[in-house]
Amino acid sequence: MKLQINKIATIFLLLFILIASSSFAQKLPDPVGYVNDFARVVSSDISQQITAICTEVETKTSAQIAVVTIPSLENYSIEEYAVLLFEKWGIGARGKDNGILILNAIEDRKIRIEVGYGLEGIIPDGKAGRIRDQHLIPYLKTAEYGRAYLSAVQAIAGEIANEYGVELSGGVTPIRGEDQGSGAGKLITILILIFLVFITRGRILPWLFLGAMLGGGGRSRGGFGGGGGFSGGFGGFGGGMSGGGGASGSY
Image 1 (cartoon, rainbow, N blue to C red):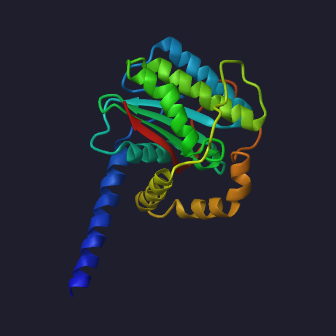
Image 2 (cartoon, rainbow, N blue to C red):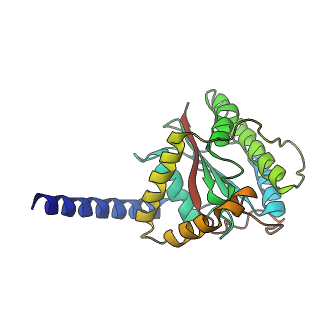
Image 3 (cartoon, rainbow, N blue to C red):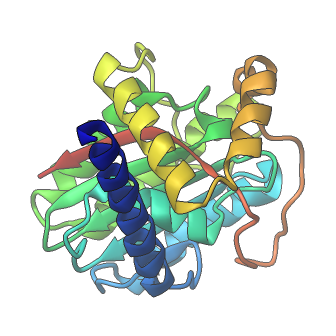
């Protein structure tokens, strides 16, 4: 009898989480470009520089980079918010999942780099952590928000261009060093994937199974193919999904 009560309580708890998460996802903002400065901390000049880099990256590789600032996380963890936003916007190309989200909650002083499944071979947890530590947090600590995002986007763009064998206009350099993610990062990835299954009502499962079957080849080349995209600026995100990897931090 006690076991049955526990099962019922667990079911109600999961239903509550599902309903609450779905309701919150509906309140998330819609994208306005590669730079989505909802907290209004980025100058127009830096926003244009970031947009130019992101446009060139997408045109030459089909990968998409999104920068998002928000005032507050509204009592969600930055990992939960990043996954929900990534899922709603579909950053990266559908089937290639080659998107990256840089999310900064200004009042909470939290930062997250969320990596699409197709780019986890290029930017694993360890490398995402170095980009966070070297390019984001030093500037965020001094409230130089625009410089932080520009520096991180340049580093990410350099990694993508280097992997795909294309040249970008300038100001992009791959990050060097050990690429292995931590055990804690892998655990967070698993928990986020479980959370995704609940909030998407299982819609993510076919993509997870497909990714698992094709994971070896996809990860070695970053999961994206050639040339697609457009040169005329932002035209919307392509339906990509997060792999749950990346790096979070406070400053």
